[in-house]
Picture 1 (cartoon, rainbow, N blue to C red):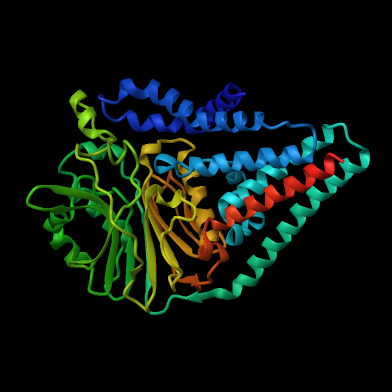
Picture 2 (picture 1 turned 180 degrees about the vertical axis):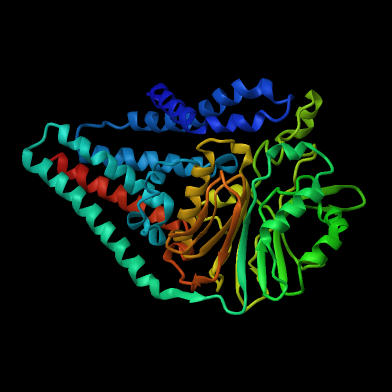
Length: 459
């Protein structure tokens, strides 16, 4: 049974993670690794599904309702483990098939992604009961139960979105601009092009010196430029931006001690003089992309992390909300794929209304990758009840409200600017308060239900 699940998982992940190999095409040193990445990563991730089917085989499963619940429970727990073990990779779990059905996923604000994943797997399995050797009354009951669940959930979502419309309020005295360039990923390996890129970012920004404005630049637009080097372009910023402006951007920062030097992938808030106002250093780093596991060993073979530079990024210490500097509003910083971790915002509920997610999605290439990445953003907005400001280079930039509604969006094939003038006021969700504890409560409910149904079926 392990082999069946493993092969299914391999096929599943090969079909939707093929884009990973695109990141290996930019440097000659990595190109020989493309076939290995295409095969080995899905093989590894498929192991989780292999263990899922193996554990299911230990039960005396028959063609009845308890079998559906047992399989759904085991499979969802395996998916949860996949999201956390060895740093975790909760990419493309089954529940993301609901991404385009906003009414159906509003329940995320109560139960979260993993709980909805459990319920979704159960719903997707229920039609198979029709083919079991059961009375027609039972089959009709199953169909009606499925329809009832879907209708009730859709009605709840519709009502929630309708009621939350009154939460909209205008940004007073300032506005936010999401800057979404399309700078080729090849510039990571082309030195001394910083001035050209800065001019392009400023041209897109089109700053008005009279208006209070927050400019949000993406991650990685200035590859290899740390904060100290950026200050050599201070005169350009002074000329184009005023004291009424603040710039939020992704950049490398460096901390030196007597014995070592640490480099961080950071989100910083700067004034027009490039003075540092606030800083967040990324906590969840991408393996091989931002740090090289077993670095001392692999360096012997000439390997390094994918992307600019040889030294791995260091892990930041903590994530705190950051003030915009206007109207007591603040935001939670998330860099790149930190947005994919459900229940891992790592903040106590506060009066924060926004999440800012910056990313460099050029590594995905022209694939389904940017769309998969973007789908996680919608789920986080609903779970946390926060407006999400997303600025990407070569990816999908957007402004998403706390119900997951896309207010404005720029596709990965386009560059441009999104201007934000309003937002939905903070509305703490049940999930933002309790996180993934809710998933374990629902698992306990499933186990209790399975026990009761098993007793009923054995009578």
